[in-house]
Length: 281
Ligand SMILES: C[S@@+](CC[C@H](N)C(=O)[O-])C[C@H]1O[C@@H](n2cnc3c(N)ncnc32)[C@H](O)[C@@H]1O
Image (cartoon, rainbow, N blue to C red; front, side, top):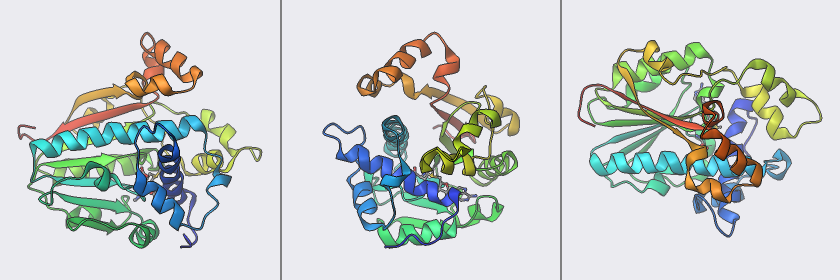
């Protein structure tokens, strides 16, 4: 299956699914996402040419696991939940979490990525795809608003401008009655620190990310509460504090130890979770 012409932003969907496929190939995977391996095997693309780093592969698998665990816990409490995966790409999170058929799962991404997704992924009966740009506020209209809702974004917000990110947050807080928003976050990533990714000597992965990255990020996770008063921070969990870090290369194990005393390191790889609405979650 040819992926067709994709923009750098759209192409990042191939990068993350490939990282999860590489994790699956390991003798002791973090995530063990067999569907990711099947997806990669179906797409005619130079995955090896991306130059995915071992640390990227592990972090992509670990953050997916952290988000899956939180979705799974939410679904266990709310079997009538709606899950909304923003910038879903070719993610098979729905197969990994395996919610009951009473849960509706919405995957939102740009039209060309959704077309590719439909070609390579077999969706469960209560899964739905929305082919739309999140920069256009109408994406939310097709999703039921009155059920407990888990909105997840795994590696999306860095690719939205700050104003689009804010509009997405406002759209969520206004449309859904109650639920949570969970996403993977890198803290503050200044424009200057992203410049080396543009060097011609860099691997395709670094150039893709440098071309697609649009948001400088924020340090204080309460920053989003200032954007919309309906949001309240309920979790700030560093990936560096997860037990899986013990199997990472030594530099990351050292960074993980240092991050216990230096929050600036811990926040470079974190899952943030916010509640909105008034229901008992
Ligand atoms: C790094 S990929 C992550 C994909 C998926 N969450 C995963 O973990 O494999 C980022 C995704 O965000 C999507 N994306 C970026 N900007 C978007 C927008 N304005 N509207 C919808 N999707 C967008 C891209 O097309 C891409 O699929």
